Image 1 (cartoon, one colour):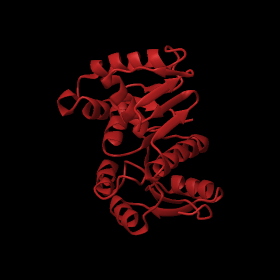
Image 2: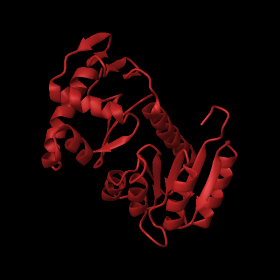
Image 3: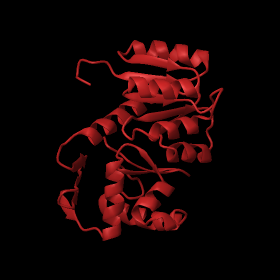
Length: 233
């Protein structure tokens, strides 16, 4: 995708009113929109058009959107998937993110919020595909993955091996919500997927070291009942 090429968005949504709304909203902002009304059609168009981003409804007429997300993730880990659904329970968000989605917006939604989430997902995809040096910077936080160095407030921060591994994992998914289960699996291993108290303890330790005001974190944000997000702006 070049700078002049429009961002191609695949919308998999069976509600005609939402399709019309997003068609007008996205096209007026320069996006190229491809539409699918069933999960099967969405899977086919995702494969044939290789969009830059996918907006996916969970309540499709022929199959559950979670199965669509899982089907897409079988052949690509780089195309961002943004779930747009009326299912607003925490368990639904966790299930969607664990199925491979990058983010989750609950209906009814505002176009401003949706566009912001789209920008975050696209930035993350661009960063994941770049060949730049593995250095993450936001505000006064700098994480040099190559040298395993962390700086905050102008000072080098000393982290334990687990603290560093947890932060490095969040850096890899910066801007995205990472579920409790995914973090536990990647940092501690599959046997610890349900040990959420581990996560709470070490996340608090990380905040105490890198946040100016740990009780009001700027970087390490909690997504209640779902997981954590490392802010990238």
